[in-house]
Length: 271
Image (cartoon, rainbow, N blue to C red; front, side, top):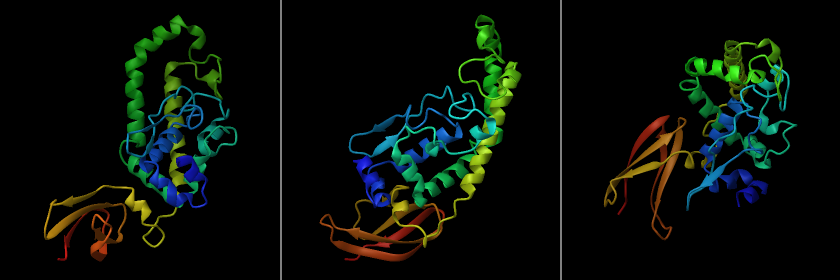
């Protein structure tokens, strides 16, 4: 049903009914941040809880990621640049990924999610600190590893080596290469995602916010007044309508000013 929705001329209106959009945003960002050649078409999981929407993930199969493989590109600069979901040499990527990206509201959500991650857990400082911590943990083991299998050690030629492998002839040089590759890849993503224009209530459709956050309502049950707590990604305006179980409008409040973050909105239910 999701694939059929993506084939429709109005797919941008239909696909949020079938998928957990945020999970697809995260899937794209993890795969692209790691520049994983096995993403999308080769090694991709989806999961679905009964009665809920289709979710992307969990992610897996990263042995060729992070500049560790010459597929689909051999040269460093080619590996750092470009989106894998639209790479001409990865023709097994399901068609819906590129269509999702072409939806301005989906790509905007990717941009905002990336900016949020880069300001914290995905900062270059955290990235390099994490890599160094793992390199230190594995330092003693890697020496025994390459004594046992010397043909697979640093500087050796093996399947899908990347440009300059022969010069990365120590463990630390490989660690530095990994740090440099991800730094450069993430800087490229910073620059590309920054090109996506900001969206305002005038350029966005309501569906973007309907599928983004839960809306809290209390007290429940109630006879008079009720309070809504709404999370908003932007400053904007909204309206709230309450319908009966038969779909009959009971009360409406329009012209509500929303600010970025949590908004508490008191609502009087008309008799």
